[in-house]
Length: 259
Image (cartoon, rainbow, N blue to C red):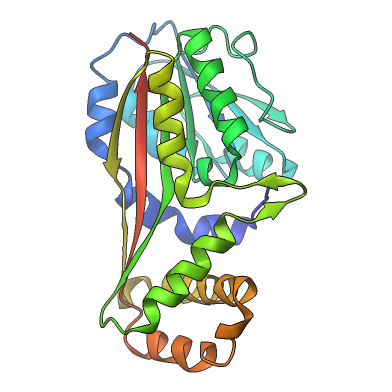
């Protein structure tokens, strides 16, 4: 599993908050979450941005169980979430079972599914269904970007980036933009009711720092995947940066409810 710099997670927090699908939270609030208190298990919590966004919307007494492999991120998350009680778990989260999450009211994650393998997503769905626990899984990459203005090279860089997202890392084949479809199938096969909703970043000059960092990383990953794009990359990146960094980066949120 990857780990991320706190600076990057901080830079994207506002865009993440604006992108997340409120309609899925509204749906979540209509089901019985066994609030006494609400126990929320946040997988790959990072610096706690999802918790800071979601806790106030859920309301009432809450206990958050934060999972991450990076102790720095866990420390930041624990120190910056307020109004809830916190417990932290450092280490790999891909082996969690239904027994491990028994008593959890809600499993959450942000920008996690695309970093998992098909087997790991299937295991996560099995754990949630076995525990009778709904899951709100947000901001999974959808594999589509829209630039303004568009140009023919966009499709080539998008395809190369998506290939990079599906690469093999330490023997693990990442799902990248296939993650949501795999998760929907895994939950529905076990009888869960699944709803998805778009959660795009809409970036422009007012998010120049985030857009610039994202663009450089996106182009860099595409070139790493397809070295033949290296000659085009400097000019391509310069045009995108000069054109106000206007881009829609598509993501998808998913809510799985256990009947």
